[in-house]
Image 1 (spheres, helix red, strand yellow):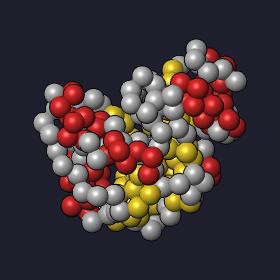
Image 2 (image 1 turned 120 degrees about the vertical axis):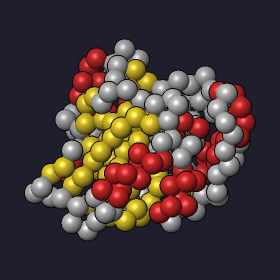
Image 3 (image 1 turned 90 degrees about the vertical axis):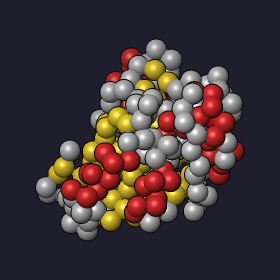
Image 4 (image 1 turned 60 degrees about the vertical axis):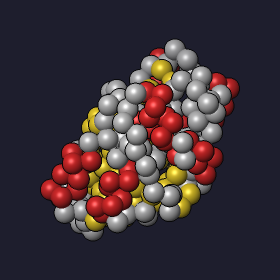
Length: 214
């Protein structure tokens, strides 16, 4: 999806063995882009970057479950872009090998994170801002692009559902609070790119989500 008037670019597609939605957000005029949740298929991701001749200025992660980070090391090696994650999910990043073992996926090693993302932190591309939305994991983040009414929600909010909270660090009460007190305050027309599956809108989830209604 592009907008010729404001040079905004967004492409979101499923990658990796668990079909995580990876999003590439960029400025077509400045030729700068973010990669969010590179959960696999690095050649597919890099193909989009090369096609549009983007400079990747950051690799962001909504959280550190393996299906959202599997290609992070390769993407960093190729692009030289820094890796960012909320510090409360560093424990998951550091045990990615054990996560791979649990799911029967070939083990990988990841480089160290270059910087941490904090709540309400500005993102230096397309006017984005980070929102701390714990519950699925302690360090779960969403990324909001107000001008374009776009939210990258990771595994916090899904179409008609929410992220599971029965994995290490998950907390049902926290995820409900994150959705009600933060995400449901956004404009109803905000499009939500979920961590898996189809997109939705904030207004739809406020009335139809079977787990968290406004």
